[in-house]
Amino acid sequence: MLKRFYLPACFFIFGFTGSAAHAQWSPIGSLLDVPVTQNCSITGGNIALARTDGMFLCSRRSELVNAQVPDASHFYMVHEYGLLAIHTNSHRLADCWAAHQLKTAHNGTYYVKQWITHWKNYGTALANFGTPEQRISNVRACCGCGV
Image (tube, rainbow, N blue to C red; front, side, top):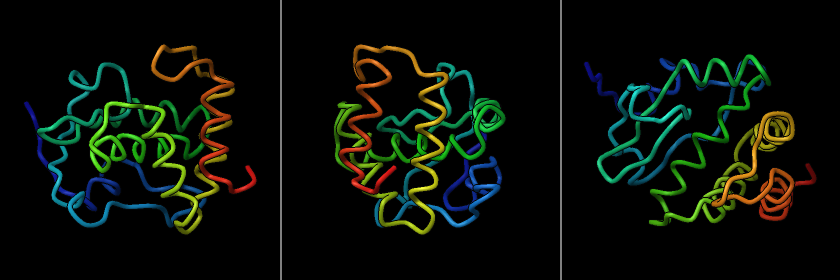
């Protein structure tokens, strides 16, 4: 059974609020209208999956990632919104968009730092991202926030 939610309520309901930093990036403009559905079977083992028909979340995966590195799941969520915001399938560009968004958000660099820690420890080489080191380097360059 699919359950549909709209933002910003899903950040609270699904544990995407930062336990340590609290304030975080949240969607604005047309991204507020993106339907959000909790359905782990659609996300393919990821925290979130952006599609033209909405955002699909897996709170179990988010909880697992946050247990590994607190608050690391937030970057992955912002990344997925980046795919929708800039109308791209390029994960490198979505990483860059997410890094830019978080750079200007309250406590945003904290979330970038937590994601970097998570990706250093758990990231794998993927064709659409490159090696973990390449992906981290791309995010650091795009953020320009000293993390």
